[in-house]
Image (cartoon, rainbow, N blue to C red):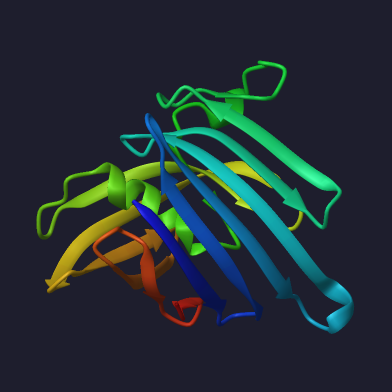
Amino acid sequence: MNQKVVWKNEELFGCEYFSITKEEKNFSAKGTIIYVEGDESNAHIVEYKVDLDTNWFTKKLTIIVDEHNSLNLMSDGMGNWFKNDGQVIDKLKGAIDIDISSTPFSNSLPINRMDWLLNQEGHFEMVYISIPSLEVKKVPQSYKYINNNGNLRYFKYRCYDYETTLCVDEQGLILDYPNVFRRVK
């Protein structure tokens, strides 16, 4: 898999250039996000890189916000998270996937990690990273595979009281996240 996409942020003024590359024993996903929150004095640039194994388990995450705030996390893929110095992050124990608030790529992780059957539902604990603050917390999310249309698959996504239907392509990448993100390339 070598793919490049552009997502438009439909909530805020902005967009993301994203690429994912399959290497010998892993995937490497990179994104550059530019968006404006409120007025033009609150513009942000976010760069991230996620290293995944071939089963879509996150191994390493690096995020840089506005060229000076950064976050580095590592995972063993079994629900244990570590800082750069190897220190365990107890509050994230049990979470497998990441959810970076400013990108729809995060939704691809649990979607691509499972072999879905129609009407199957999966429940996940996610490492949620709020952008631009880089605050990290564990949150519950669920996905239910509700429909397909050719190569397109549709999932009911839920986090707390928020619910929507996501449309993904054959690679599990978001095409439409209604009123939030839409793929333009």
